[in-house]
Length: 497
Figure 1 (cartoon, rainbow, N blue to C red):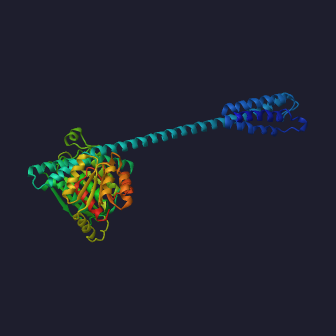
Figure 2 (cartoon, rainbow, N blue to C red):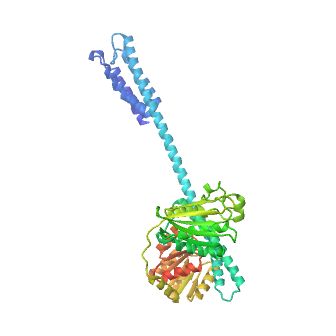
Figure 3 (spheres, rainbow, N blue to C red):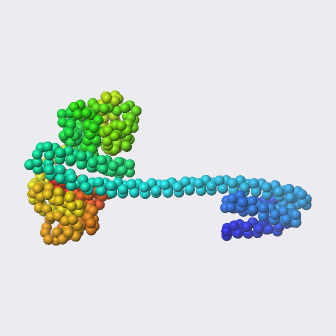
């Protein structure tokens, strides 16, 4: 508003001085009229076409009146000649101002459109990030709610399997229950892994790893069900890579499990390794003689949720995430994974290629021996868990392992127990009725360096980081497998955690 008033005043004052106060006796100079051009440019830049037209109209009115009165730089003895010169001058400058105003208006419109697009993009990105956060929170909560009831089932089946008096057929039933619980846990892990991959938050603990040793562990898991149908032909002389052993085992377990799913019992599954010397890589093949893969499915086989035709998906189950996660994990290790098949009924072969490295120097067995000695010692354990079934079964298992176990289901109860006796180790759930396990660990570790193992249905990297910051030496994700719990206790009590 003030700028418009200033511009209008400037046009009137300058127009009056140029076209009404200047007389021919001072000398005729048309150049004097160009003093008004900056005002037209100002109007064009700041007020676009409407401002330029208004300024030109006001200036022309003043100029015409002054010229007819014999004043101004275009005044001469002939009125018609004077008006013609003035008209030409004002026409040219007004046209220039209008063109400039049009260019400025177009630029401003384009700028406004760009700003609107950017605003919408920012808004869409914020909404997408908010949706991703909500999705992550939902998956984490879903994971927690699904994992928690699986823990007592898994531990109870382990307890049954280790019972010497259990009949063989019941032991086999317990093993069947355990395998299905582990499969359920793997499906939950796949959902979370897919989220980590899509968000670029997949973390690897890289070390020099013997791939064939990792293959052997994966075969032990799958071979328990397949028996003699699963054959290993390891021909690679160089079989060390820079990788995460747990993630590589996940890769090979996924491929072997996939082969076992689509290969009838009695048909062979073969795992081969070989070196490609020219490329400095190791190739691992997982080949089966099962149902095979249709050619049209091969290009999208590693896409998430891809399961081929719906009939096969319903028959064999699964979420269609294993191969997508396998591809992401292999590529995170700098390798590739491919699939080939002759078609339906011709079996399939999955090939993993990883760059090889020199093997790491061998280390002594002292740390492992220390861990075993620690596990042989009787430890005083404070077990904190608000899920009654999990608390009872885990306390029973730890007692059978020779440890002295004190239980609590709240932070208040745990602190009261810790005030009455000294403990070597605290194993605590993170979600407790009267607070978080982080708070408990900080309180217990404040006076003395009490070691701790966190149990949680939440297994994202942020959850593990928070556990470490609170003072927990280990973070185990539910459902808790007894073997993993024993290994974690060995590390913590042995001073490796």
